[in-house]
Image (cartoon, rainbow, N blue to C red; front, side, top):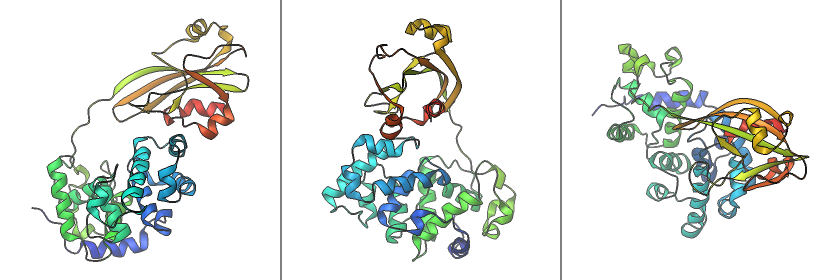
Length: 346
């Protein structure tokens, strides 16, 4: 089995102490804040996540408040972050913690792994950072760093390879400051050992330990499997406006963007004339809002939006409610897929 250099923890911790980013969950640490930050950052860039984290923890500062929050408020707090199952799993886990652990996160890696929404990486991060338990936290950043340090060209998305890398990292974990070491590996990947063939080797604090740098292969690593092409879907988004109000409808309780609210959306791309005929309004009541694209993991939405001015007596679109725009912004979670059109209402 390949190995990481024994000198890695010492050199990396020394660099981390001087260069780590100042982040709210690090400056005011608690097991709860560590948990929320780790789940929030699973699919979100750190820079984008800071404001969401502060808003979320201000509204829901502890496990009891998270366990009792209404789902629509929870989704509103998560609005714009995407992957809303993460928020739902947080609440499920909080309820489980209230029932089984007196409303506290357990200082136990196996127990953390059993919480909804936590895999080995997230549980390892929480266990090591919050409780200094000696377990690794191997995410995409760490896989990339390890592949380059060892000049290992195996596919890091292969399950068996991931498992072996986790064991390799485990072998070099220090006896103390495990959480800081795990964070230093992630920090190195986020700030220096960048993805897509862009490592900043001249700034790397462990360059002398890196086999890929020595071999000149750092630009070609890590090896990943090719992703399948996304399916493209064309949609027409309608902002149906009566004086002072706009119509929205709730998505189904399961599937993509479950239970969130959206503007009425038609399959395919339609012209202003087609929209006017469909809604029995004059063409001048239909204002094009331009195209927009939103990319999900496996789907790409290619959208055309229209604002439609309706008379006060116009009936609601099927399944819609009509509400003041201020109420929409305050209380109804709208997916970021509609952000380009939502901002036209501000």
